[in-house]
Amino acid sequence: MVKTTHRVLSKSQKTITLEPPLNSSYSVPVGILSSIVLNDSIEIVLKPKKQQIKILPRKNLLSRSEKIEKKIVANLDHLFLVVTNFPSFNLLNSAKMAIRARNENIPLTIIMNKVDHPNVNESFKKKVKALIPFSVCDEANDNKKFKIIQVSLHDDTLIKNLSSKIREVALTSESSEVSICLIGQSGVGKSSLINKLIPSAAQKTEIVSTRHKKGRHTTRESRSFEYKICGDNKKRIFVMDTPGIDSFGLEDLEYRELAEYFSEWEDINQQYFFCKFKNCSHDCEPDCGIRRFLVNLRNESEDFQHISSRLTLWKKLMFNINKKSVENNRS
Ligand SMILES: Nc1nc2c(ncn2[C@@H]2O[C@H](COP(=O)(O)OP(=O)(O)O)[C@@H](O)[C@H]2O)c(=O)[nH]1
Ligand SMILES: [Mg+2]
Ligand SMILES: [Zn+2]
Image: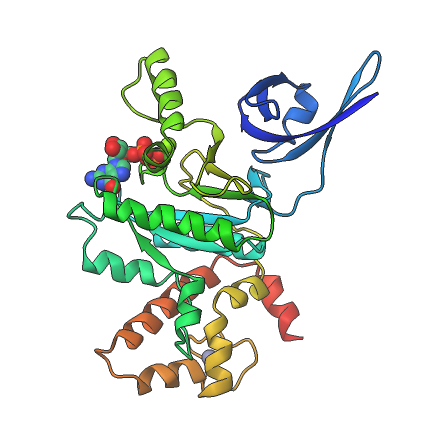
């Protein structure tokens, strides 16, 4: 009996590729293939006449929707949510991705791409800020936790912002193997950014697109690429490309999960004004601390704009949550 463990580097309809050995293609019975996701750790046990495949316990799992299970990737150390305004930005969907990451305890960084493009203007940048919790104490450390990194494929200095972030994630991680995944709407530039950072990834994309005679670089399958940083041979970094995610369900979102993403409400309640009602929706209830806090900020201030856009986003998301969970939380 031989027992080996492997990382899933890519997954298509019929096969997965694994490492080690690097990029070995592997045919897997359909039954188990559907449960395997990118970056899973799997164990293969070879017995004299048969083989057994087992998915090892996952650290976390990012999926599109809870109801119709659409798993994207597992075992992440960090998630890069790539956003841009060409194609146009979808705040609600992006927020849903951020919430899902938070639920799975995956640290998130927002990568604002295509800053060279005229659509990526100040008003768009303000919109994106709604994804970031308002920091009540506004300490430098707090901002670091949830940073927006501006990049452009066509600007090497800005690309460095991205590579330094990857480096930072890798070097601050305790594990020797670090997994980072790029997600976002299609066309935001995920594949282009990975190709830029990892030249061997670019080659693969080219081969695929020539074979299928397609001009577009459409990523249908999820893939993982090893990113080498100079001066460190001990850390292994895997950067993952995923197909564009244009809709992200959160049908089963619980009130508690939403409240965690909008942690500033609780901070404001504790430090400034109190909402009269527990689980206030900060919408039309009397004596709402958040609305009072907002009134106290000056209209034109950046904080005012930030809180207002967070509040608008919160209200939109409240429509999406499992109504029962609000009741449960109230009792
Ligand atoms: N202007 C501009 N275009 C970009 C940038 N990054 C990517 N693109 C273009 O955006 C299009 C979609 O990129 P792609 O990597 O396929 O997006 P994906 O669907 O997220 O993988 C391609 O035509 C890229 O050349 C950028 O920083 N600036
Ligand atoms: Mg792509
Ligand atoms: Zn309130």
